[in-house]
Image (cartoon, rainbow, N blue to C red; front, top):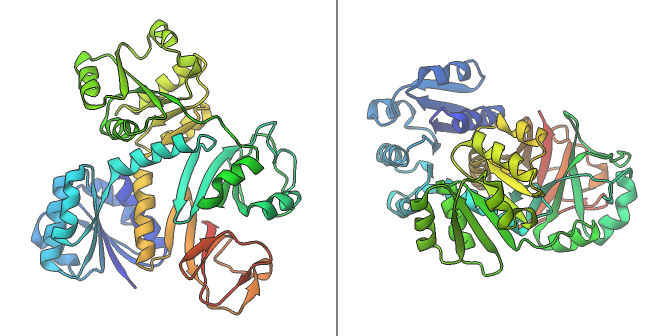
Length: 424
């Protein structure tokens, strides 16, 4: 078994450890907090070690592991631990979570892979701006998966998937998953799409614009944005938006010094001092006509309340920053349009990196629903005749470095990599 060590048993570390352990890897997880390790100690294939990874005596216990993922809440701690790991095992592959871009310089110095969680989150926010029809986005290399709720005017409404074959002939896409109420369905040709269903649709990135037209998902491009809350995520998002001339950005914050700082840093962003619940101010600035509202403070409860408040002022599209997965369902129940969860974005990136290391886990679509990459070694068969017990649905095929959406008639060849959806 490949041996993987996770440093940090917080929300992300615990999730990564459990998912990799399900993939039949030998996993160890280190943390100084014994309470965080208690539940994990009962899971199969997970070794829990209650020790301080900043001490050599702790890392000595796992120095022969093949891969280290370091993700405590402190950048400095993560880099210190990574340095010690390299001292003990110079050949160890190491992935380190950071939130300051300056620390990217350690990639070459320590020969490791840093992941800037702040920048990845800002990129995800920009993705929502670029693809306003999508309520969530997942990236699988050349493949984009987006989530969309079925409305009355949807081309999917009251139609069976097999009836959409002409559209799939025009632009290859796959409905990989349907959420109906609290249930998840793996769709088949006879599956009828109902009002309120949430669809997860996979498409090749190069075909996104064409698919949007075919499915009549066309939205007006985002030209004006309101941002509430000042966090490291909001700041990096504004930095990216400041480079774009096609979007007008209005930033509202009660602290004059914060507004002054934003104005000085970003010449293309209009900063207004005022309470984010000042209805008169927001209406005067056209909140009801804006294209997207982003609530990005470090307080997720405030973000959610503010999103509901602005929705009542006529805002159609809003996005909240949340930090705990437990808030996901609440956000959806309140009919908030979209959300970003930095920890989940980080996990998706980790899986993309691990995929390159021939680890099959790619990403978590939803809790308990994962996408695996499988190396197919069977005989050549059309997709529609291929039966794999470890795969509920084949989303995409990677062949000779190119990833594409297959049709039922697509011949699956020996040596292909298959992206498989599986409900655990």
